[in-house]
Image 1 (cartoon, rainbow over the protein chains, first blue to last red):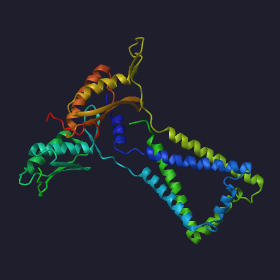
Image 2: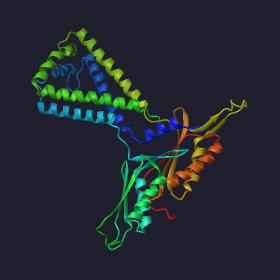
Image 3: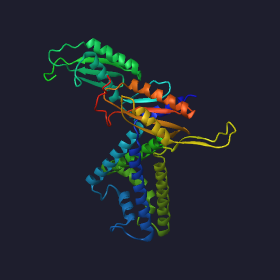
Image 4: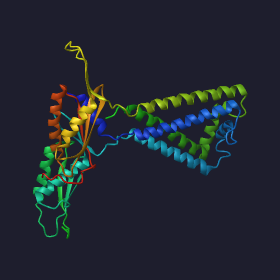
Length: 193
Length: 197
C-alpha cells in the first residue's frame, strides 16, 4: 500500500506558505463592515442617531460625492483601503513558495528547510578542506548551492576537492528540484583564522 | 498539514481583496475625476431609498435589505473562519476487527506513537529536538515528525535513520501510515555541531 496521492498533497501544502493569518484579518474586516451595516440599519429602524450622525445622512453625503467632502481625507482613506485590498489579492493569487526542498524516500514524505541544506553543504566543504568551523558559509537557492570558503591568510585550499565533496553530499541527499554545487574561495584571507 | 481548506481561504482573500481594491480606486476616481463623478451621480439614484428624503416605507424596505445582506455576509465570514486549522487527532489506529470476523476493537492513542517515536528518533546523533503529531489527511491518519537537526547534520542520514524507525513502527502497528518528515531549521541543540563527524 502506497500513499502517493496523500504524499503529493502533503508535500504541495508543506512547500507553500500558509495564508491563514491573512485570511483571518480579511474575515475580521468583513465582519466589522457587516456589523457596522447591521448597526446602521438598527439605528434607522429605531430613529436614533449615533454620535450625532444619522446613517441616512451618510448615504446622502456619499451619493452627492465629491461635493461637500474633504478631498485629502477621502483620497487618503480610499488609498489605504485600495492598498489593503491589493495586499489581500496578492496573498490570494501569488504562489509564495517557502524556502524548502523535498527529498526522495521510499517510505516517507520529506521536506527540508534550505537552511539545513546550506549547513550540510558548509560542513561537507569544511571536512574536505580541514578548515575551522566558521570558515565555510553555505547558501541554498532553488536550483543552486553556493559555498564560500574563507581560509586564514596564506592557507592553500583545495577548491576542487571541496566542490566534489559538496556535490557528493548533495548526490546522497538527492533533493527535488536538484541543485548544482558551486564553491568559491574568498581571496581575501582572514587574519584571525 | 492541518485540515485548513486552502481553496476557501484563497477565494476569500481574492474576493475581499478585489472588493476593497475596487472600492478604494472607485472612491479616489469619484473624488478627483469629473467624468467619474458624473457617472457616479447617474448611478447614485439607486441609493435614494436609503437616504433621508425617502418615504418611511421605502426607507424601511431598503434598510431591511441592508440588514439582511450584512447578516448573510457575517455568517459567511464565520463559516470561512471555521475552515481554518484543526485536523489533529487523538487516535492513530482504530480497528474493530470486522475483516477477520473477530469481536472486539483495537484503538491506539496518538500519545503512544508520539512517545515511541520521540524516544527512538531522539536517540539519533544528528537530531537536536523533535515533535511528533498525528493529523487526519484525506480521511486517514498521517504522522508528522518535525526534526530540528544539529548544525551541519546530513539530511540524508536523518532520513535513513527515521526510515528504519518507521519500518519498526509499521511492523508494530501492522499498517503503513503516511508519514511526513519535516527537517526544520533552528531550535534547541541546533547550535552545537554533531561530534560524531
